[in-house]
Image 1 (tube, helix red, strand yellow):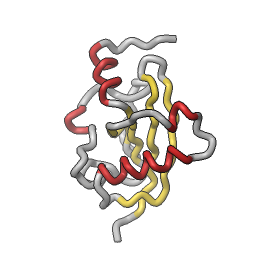
Image 2 (cartoon, rainbow, N blue to C red):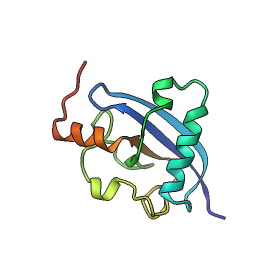
Image 3 (spheres, helix red, strand yellow):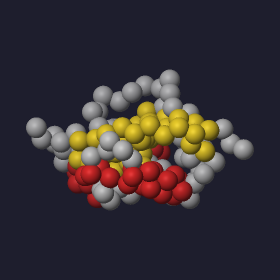
Length: 125
């Protein structure tokens, strides 16, 4: 039985407007695949109390590590635009292989939104 971890998932609704909500997951199995964890998070947020409807119904499809316990935090307000090849979680990997550990924070977002924002990283107020 793999160790259970606490993972914070930052639901990113809009990069331009810095619109995101952190959701904490306890008892996350790090030996599950990224694909399974994404499904677990989707199922959870669809019914989670206190989460505004726009966050529940959004078409999230990609996860990226933002911060790991005892590591340096990024200055970016939503998430770093660097190191995608290292930090974006791949479907077939286990969470451990993807670099997720206890107290890791990951962003959950739509790849298409991220690509548009990354090409022109402007924030709107």
